[in-house]
Length: 226
Image (cartoon, rainbow, N blue to C red):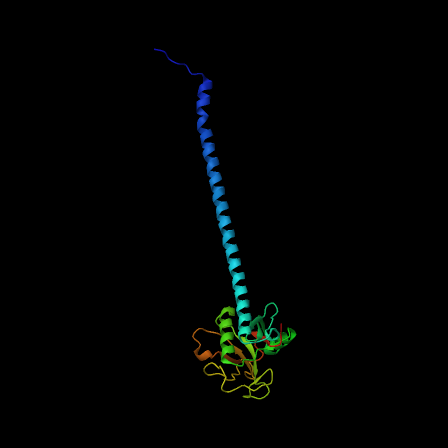
């Protein structure tokens, strides 16, 4: 019976195979992890690009729709407003929704510095548009925005900033408003804000407030033309 004698070198060679295989498996696992991470990053980049393209497409569609509305109404290019950055076009006017909280007078001054004034609401359609935009602009349910309506000259005589008298048949007061409360200011509430809510009945979203309250505002400029 022959017995093979293995040299120490043979034992050393055989024992080294296991670590080598382990190293190979470790290398393969690392490559898979790296590939997985790369795939996730690539997918995220593709999604972000898709979202950006979608937003750009929607913006182009909105602008095209507005231009088509102008043409449908047989308006010339001169009457279709071209709003500056940050202003939103609607119905031949441009609107700016300010998130800066200022008093009524300060808000009006800021609107004028941008070439406009606090908004004057002339129709139910305009009120509906503003309410729909505020629903997206409001950060908190209690957010209110100044509009260009006041009775600061004579109590109960409501005037717009363009000096036109408030049309009694075209008002959007909340229930119980105006109430001229004097809790915040002894002078009462002589300036008007509006807010937004899905369930607001008949677009009734106007509230009289102290003109000294610091609130957001809506500016309007009907004079920007293309």
